[in-house]
Amino acid sequence: LKEIKNICCIGAGYVGGPTMTMIAAKCPHINVNVVDINDNRIKAWNNPDTDYIPIYEPGLASLVNEARGRNLFFSTNVNQAIQDADMIFISVNTPTKTYGVGKGMAADLKYIELCARQIATVATSDKIIVEKSTLPVRTAEALKRILDNTGNGVHFDILSNPEFLAEGTAVSDLLNPDRVLIGGEETENGRLAQQALVDVYANWVPKDRILTTNVWSSELSKLTANAFLAQRVSSINSLSELCEVTEADVDEVARAIGSDSRIGSKFLKASVGFGGSCFQKDILNLVYISKSYGLNEVADYWEQVIIMNDYQKRRFAKKIVETLFNTVSGKRIAILGWAFKKDTNDTRESAAIYVADYLLSEQAELVIYDPKVTKDQIFSDLDYLGSRSTEENRDLVEVSNSPYDAVENAHAVAILTEWDEFVTYDWSKIYNSMLKPAFLFDGRRLLSDELMREIGFEFYKIGKG
Ligand code: NAI
Image 1 (tube, rainbow, N blue to C red):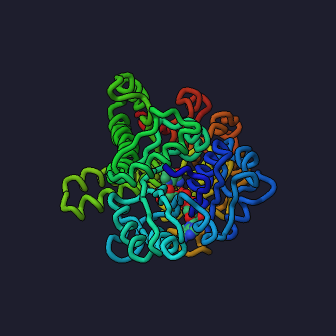
Image 2 (image 1 turned 180 degrees about the vertical axis):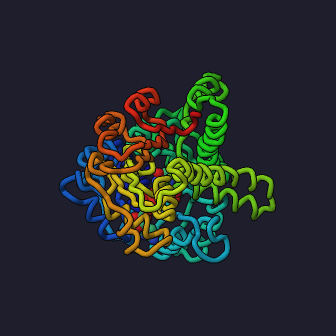
Image 3 (image 1 turned 120 degrees about the vertical axis):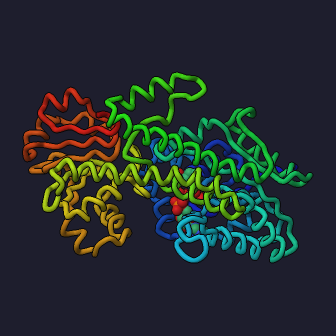
């Protein structure tokens, strides 16, 4: 069994950066080189002041401080890192395809394939290749064919080791994972490679939490995990509307069903809809794969999770327009929260983007406040949709540094991210500075109905009639 002394990770993003930092911190005897073609990102990872590393996660900066320069290195020298490594993690992005066959559904594997070709060209000694990116089931087969056919006669073993961390809690998830999953080929070499990676994680993860499976089960489990998580959100969100018309309360329903140990209480919070870079992309990918095998019923079943989520965002925006006497044209609406969830600055697929876009199409004037998201990011998210020109976006949207400025003279306030600080605001002061009637739309069920109504708000909360 080969002992791993040198690891390379291609891709220094939200997954590659934190996972490799944890491996380096927990395995001082292993050298970890994280490489990326994005020079700015690598520069930021190397910033002497770890407040400026490119990814904000509670606890990450101090871990980077501990390991960087000791056995953790960030660089753009991909070839050198490949050559030196015994084990190579591929952690590049796998977005939804935006062109050609499978457009809007399939995962775009061009970045993965480029990595494989580069490894094949550069490697002069045997390597274990670890799929860390989320990939369609049977991608390892394609990787193997590329590696075996263009290589320099070196031997490659391929493992699947999907990442289950959640943004916002990445460090504690990596430190104390529910499980680590390692899929390997069912051959003698495959088993040895699998054991080599088990031994890396065993430096800090209890052995009974390290699951080994065949490669295909492992690849498919990651897509399945995200599909199940998103499905719970869409399930409770679908019932939130039924609660509104029947005067049930969705949190009470969630608590009642969540106490059933077969159902469990987590991930049953109704909201304006899930976001983030993974849930939608991975379900679309699952739908695409199912269709490509002719499994249309399976595909339709999972696609409904996305349809429900899109509906929930639209429904919330529509509710605002209807409540404001069927027009928001020229009305100032304050949006609190832009990140897709609290404790992250990541806005990819955030519900706020789509709600804002809907309101802008109704000619509303928006003022946006988020504690961690920059103005540039907000405009870039709106521009990316292409619904209107960049000038129009800047005419209609203002980004504020203060929640109290944002709500001044607003017809309505909408809460779109569950930031803790929103609960602590002086809501009477906010009420006083708004136009009357003052409408408040809570897309995250953060605020108390009684309190808000007592202050004088016309209050709407998702999932409550
Ligand atoms: P990201 O976009 O933050 O990072 C990917 C990095 O790979 C980028 O910095 C890019 O420059 C680099 N890259 C692309 N091609 C390259 C090449 N040929 N050579 C060197 N560098 C290259 O993506 P993120 O969020 O880290 O996701 C990576 C993978 O992990 C995806 O497959 C995603 O689905 C999966 N994943 C993401 C999670 C998350 O919370 N963000 C959680 C679990 C899995």
